[in-house]
Image 1 (spheres, rainbow, N blue to C red):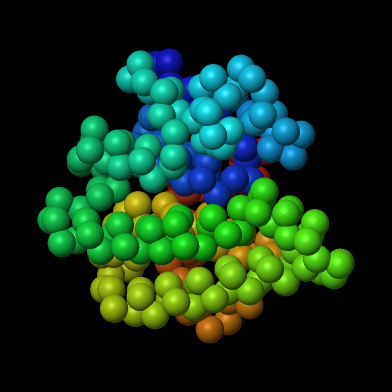
Image 2: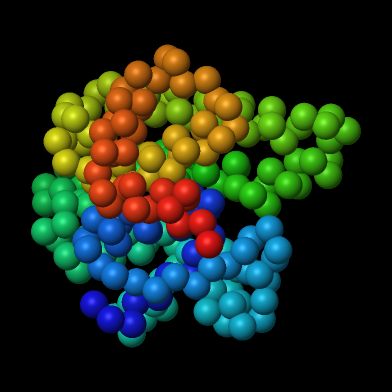
Amino acid sequence: MSNVVLYDYWRSSASYRVRIALNMLGIGYRTVPIDLLDGEQKNPDYLQLNPQGFVPTLVIDGQVMTQSLAIIEYLAERWPESGLMPQDAAARQQVRTLSYAIAMDIHPICNTHVAAYVTTISDKAEAREEWMKHFIGMGLHKLEAMLGKCDGAFSHGDKPTMADVCLVPQVYNARRWDVDLRDLKRIVAIDERCAGLPGFQAAHPDSAKP
């Protein structure tokens, strides 16, 4: 597919998700880096594309798309054979539940701009690190319990779905902030399986870094 453009920041969890999904589908794309640390997301030209000033933004099928889970669900509907979302309605609900637990409960309170604000309202030098460890660790322990009710090699079944596309970037962030993963055996096992898949490997921040 031609003319697919991903506005991306290499360490963004949301961008990382979309890179994985595109790779799983075998969709080639051109990357336009948006450096969040340099504030490029606030550039007026970029805000014309994405008024929220977030990443990712995906241009595909002549459409400009934002919000990573909405993008991934679009890809799943456009290419249902991808396996990103199961065919069964109840199974799709379970995959959404796991995905939302990460993307809507853990990620927003650990986002770059949220964590940066924490340092402005606390006198503790280590406030940001404590914040990230607390909320990522707590969220992942809850997710571990949720995954204990699911069968298969991956988060739901024996093939990766949107739930795994969300899980892997969150585990990357957990390791980055030195969150203790020793009790999260199912999460670690799933992450290791995903790490062996080419689509996940190519999307890793170490591969996506400009």
